Structures are given as structure tokens and as C-alpha cells.
Length: 136
Image (cartoon, rainbow, N blue to C red):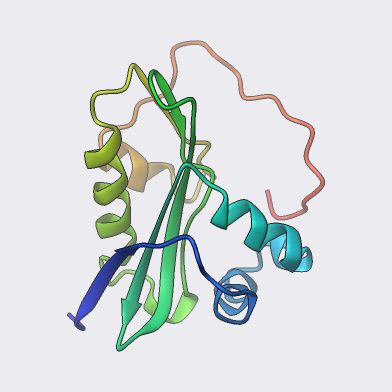
């Protein structure tokens, strides 16, 4: 595995973030200024780098006490299946492991990954949203 370094930094740039989102076809890449503001203003932001090049990130939105939501866990398409997503998620889970509720919304193609990481379907709940994207 490449030499992956993990950072807690809230100073990511549009230039380094957008290629990761575009490589995965995420519609938030079409709103670069809002995306970078959202990431840099998250409760927590974990980034993964190889040779100082951003290759993945994960963020948390939280009340700081009971509930945390991980809206973005993304790894550049060229680095998929390298363990980077696992490292990022484990880093976030370590920070929030004492919280009452840890939430993710997983696409059907990523639900197995989250299940392996300890997440379960939330009882009989049904996710509902108003969403302006197109990749789900």
C-alpha cells in the first residue's frame, strides 16, 4: 500500500477537491464554491494524502454531543479498493465512537462496505430527502 497520510485540516482547496468528486461522478462537483465551504465548515474533516496529493476525504456534521452524520466519504476513483476509505472512516469513528447515534446514508453499491464497518439498517426507518443531485 502507498504511504497514506491522514490529516485533520479544514483548509482544502477547490483545485484539489473537485477532481475527486468528478472522478466519482458526484453532482456536488458542479457547485465547487459551496462544496468547499461545506467541507471546510464541517464539524470534522479528515483527508487522506499520498505524497501530499489529496486522494480522499470524509466529513462529519454533528451537534457535538449525541448525533453525528457522515455525509461524504469519497476516494478518488484511481485509488478505490486501496483501503483509503476504510482508514478515513475508522478515523471518524474513533472520534465519534461515544456518540448515541452515528448516521450514514449509503448507496446500494456501498452498503456492504458500511455494514462491514459496523453500521446496520436503522430499524424500520425510511430515508427521506429533498435532493438536487442526480447520482443516487
